[in-house]
Length: 389
Image 1 (cartoon, one colour):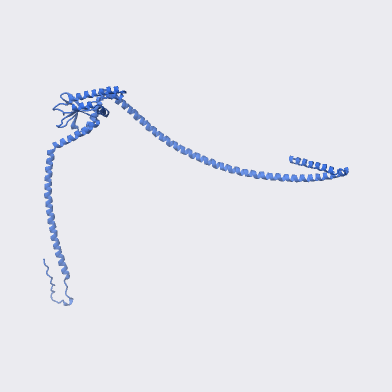
Image 2: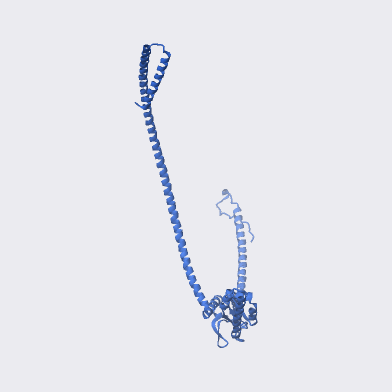
């Protein structure tokens, strides 16, 4: 028996006990036999009822067990359906997630490849830039080595002067390392006609004094550096004025070429006395920019001189051009006369064609005789109306 059956039997026994006690109290005065008989009867009824109740309870328990089995079966089936749905959804979600992860990985891979390609290109550019910087650094070191040596610095100025002159002027207008005043060599001599005559150009580069000026940290150092720069430029100006301005051989002025715009600007901005002293000595200080402007002016002067030298040739050509113009005018006049004669001939031809047209119209207006009037005699030709010429 189950725990439920035992509990039910205990409850029934308790009820029977209570009923017996009550019955005993109500019938205290009855006899013991009646009581016992009644008790037996009631106990039999209770036993029968208990048996009936037990059968009903067993049936009910069987129904409950069957209902529970059916419910468990339905629940198990529902759980299986839910498990299949959950498994299907999980598979779909897993497939979706896998697809998204694959697409993300593919995009990430492509992006990574693109980024790596860009990175390689940039690294290549950086590598080339690094090589250029290295080469530039080497060139700067070489330039610094050149500029630190006075002789090399002078050669640098002469090379820059050579480039500017050869770009601006024809070869016949200049000569390098020319001799003036007997045995004095000048960096460049411009061969111009008189006036002004040959102009000497000498390259100077007072770089050390300018570097001291740039490196000066105090006012006293800057004043001392400017004084040294003024002294060095003044020495060069006096040397050029004494050596390369030769009366009767060169022009009355010469040029001092500074291959640095910075030094040229420093002289004109902070050392005007040096520039004025050079003007008084007829030595014109020029930088690469101002020298190019001067050379363009020289080229214009050379072109003007060449045109003056060729003036007689131009006059002769103009004379021949005038003769050609006279002959052209005479031929045009003859052609005009021919056109006039042709016009008159065309007018006469039009007159003749008009007369021929009128005669043909009159011939068409003549009336022929009737056929009955024709005889055996020779036909008389019709008389035509006279047409005036």
